[in-house]
Length: 255
Image 1: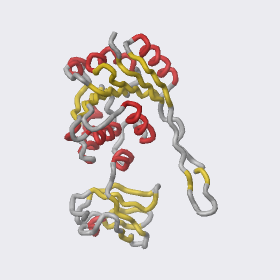
Image 2: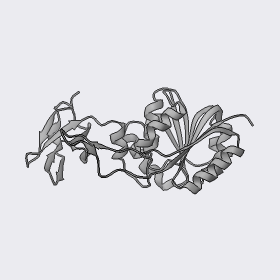
Image 3: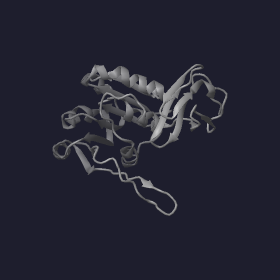
Image 4: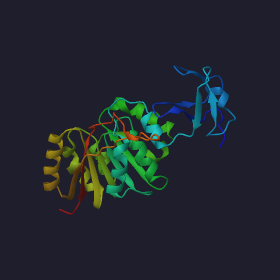
């Protein structure tokens, strides 16, 4: 695949030093590794490399969903990719699923959800803060996921018009207050996952699941540890992402 003007390219030096850039003819990126001439990549093939003016080799990669999420513009704390796979597996998310999300934030999780349910499914995402919406829209457009996502300001009446939802995601500080609102929109047996930064929130959520028409409650925290794999001296990395959030899952049953 050939890089052209307007293409998005991940400039990769190593796992800690990489840049996601939209290519323009005269564009140059000034880094501590030297000047990266983005315009010079036009006509090159993804997977090839260029040199900075300090002779540092920079590889040209096509960005994937992980890259878009980690390089997205942020106004709030995002749900990290380490949680994405478990959310998808635990809820049965797939192409064609209809997803309702309350708490768009920077649309990092929205981007991932859309990449799974596309092209036949759709994500309806709402936020209580209108200021977040423009940044979320830009991030969705950058990843080309915007055709599969409908954004809106939180409105219980609009949410009530969405039916037969396969998965609900609630990423707000008081998710239990939204369970009665999202319940009518969900298919019987559909899943809900709530993002809870603290154990107090998780405990309160689990109590409301029990009394609110939800079963199969599951509260988890995921960790990921990188391994520095080098010949003769492979060991775990000295640094890792610690606690980010707890995930509270449940499934709807008829009351």
